Image 1 (cartoon, rainbow, N blue to C red):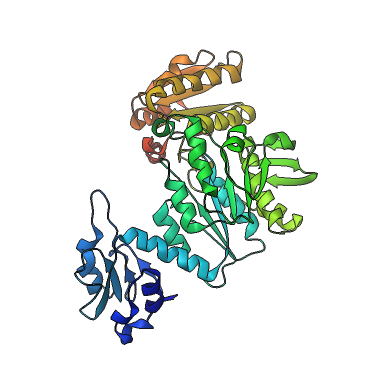
Image 2 (cartoon, rainbow, N blue to C red):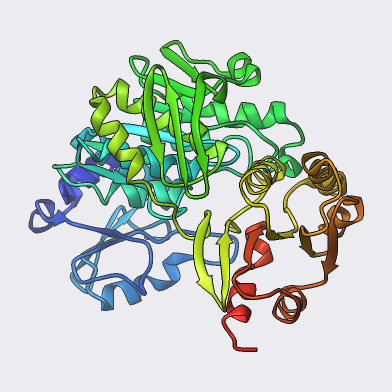
Length: 449
């Protein structure tokens, strides 16, 4: 909790202007949305291109807010319907300052995670390991921007020992901003790939953006990162650095739904397939080791990991065995998942959709996926079917010459084809960018023929 006295001090508001009856009020929750605001919350109205939260301040007061911030308040302090209003220059900046203050006040060990792909999976793997020993809070779902940072920080309690922050980005400076207010002790970079290359222009710029994670990191902490020369040459961090890769792994078993491997002379297992999942787990192992977690607990944490929604999620739908990995896609993650599918499944239907945010070379990246499939299959495979959805994904089909492939304009078309031509009990793998809304395919398959 934060008192109004503390809030005023953090935001540089003259505490003497705040009535004594308000100074020691404890704020148990900050709300940015009047639709979910509860009585006793403190309202922070945020602004965007198409909205201004200050337009809903009266609604917040009606809903029982004990206070609010605003840039349009005429005086430093105002009382409106017995609700305290405080004037600030920028409400989002104020929200971040308050979150940083609360982070320092409770002082958990902070782990911050980013990467072109796999950052959410890495977050879940790290959580599964770290929570074996410590009371741990993590970024929920994909709330990985600066607002999600604040929401996550304010969800911790005095009992929280470790806080795991996921940091996404769409351009330079965004991860640096999150790092500034999170002040991580442990930073993890899962990889630097081609996601968002349409916005940033090159892998070098992507690496620069990802390496912003250490900008405000504790110098006595550790950076745990994928063993990539581009990361090594870009990152600026004076503290301890540890790099990992699949080259350090000895695979013992690769099966559908099961991976067993050896890393640094110790054996681990995951109840999921995929080399990339094993590679992501290495950051969790190294984080656990750094935090002093015993091998047995690290091993247990990894074995208990379960994929979250739309990330290699398996489900029986409409008589088909569905593997849904359609939360997001970029050239690197597309190749990694296709590699796993072709390695472990002999009889499967692969459904691929457009990859977004690839810039002027988007057609090239899609054609490259088709060439990758040709190379992985190596020879003609008459039983394999690769269905593509979308204008860009037609480039994938156009390149494939070793198996059956067909392009569809939309999700309804490919759903109709599957229901009419694919026998039940077949395994179907789905991979696409989130904008393709592949959940529509699942909904269509749930309908009876």
